[in-house]
Image (cartoon, rainbow, N blue to C red; front, side, top):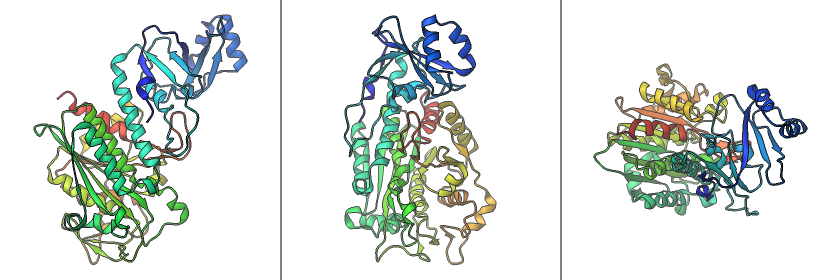
Length: 461
């Protein structure tokens, strides 16, 4: 794990190189105020302060160089990330000493997933700040994002249901939380859809439901649910090879839920936390669930299986039922649920659906404030007809593919009481291409928005 605490430290006057952050619209004014030496260096580098553009500026002495970095019109978490990957090892500061939200990108740009591919030690680029009160919070966020990335990037041979359970228990042990894992007969009886999805896996990768409980029972109760499909072959409705290539990331919802739980506990947020992760592998064997099967659920509803590759909503249905039984103030689930969400919104925008207007508004606002945007889709009641089955209470995958993300949300809604505030995030959990501070691979998308919403609601209680 990257030692983020060593990369963001209080400014006590240590020797450091200056990073001049410049916006394109203010470039000419900034340049005019610089000495001739700086203007000459900027001209030689053909620097125009475009977002992400970077240039070294020579100083009067060899070790007195600085740099210029172009950023966008508004400040965001990724402003400083381009510099953090290009600069040599050393200490750096901004002229005003205030990195703001850019400190997070500075840290995450230096995170590496090196479990399987060792390289030379990464240069230690240390950012100095005169706002030490924000250091702990920024480091905690960086660790949470890195946890999501590392869990998602770990291949399925090393991140099955048992290993995911182990990761949950490791986080719980750090914070004195309790855990409970339901397997075998208990899973068959209490969580029949979780059991059905995971039953074709070999015994070492058997399905389970893992719960984490933490906090004072007198505090407001909240529930966080994460989809933990550690690998998704599609089942008997098998995916093509191209569709299976990234299915190690189908436990990305669980990774988000666990990282959020870690943030909640590390900050001692005054809530009573209940985290639930159904952990399965959607495999193929003689006892795999079949198209046309009808499954019971913990809720009591029966579900006709129209497509075995729509398995995530099944395991979430049982988990959401249990989460709601505790009568929490709110329930939030994370899931890499539908390809339709990516077709509609691309890889960067998690789809948000919610049955509570205040909760939805708070989440959208938090996404804007943190640079972790969400995009709302409706729980359109007219599409509930698509979930009807001739032989069961509902089916898991309507024919035709219309409104695939919305109908998945409407399916989950069936397992949440009408008066239970609930939000569902359909997140990609993956960067298909590298960007400053965001390498190709596993990514936390929606995590910071939900965390900001929770802090605003509960930190002052």
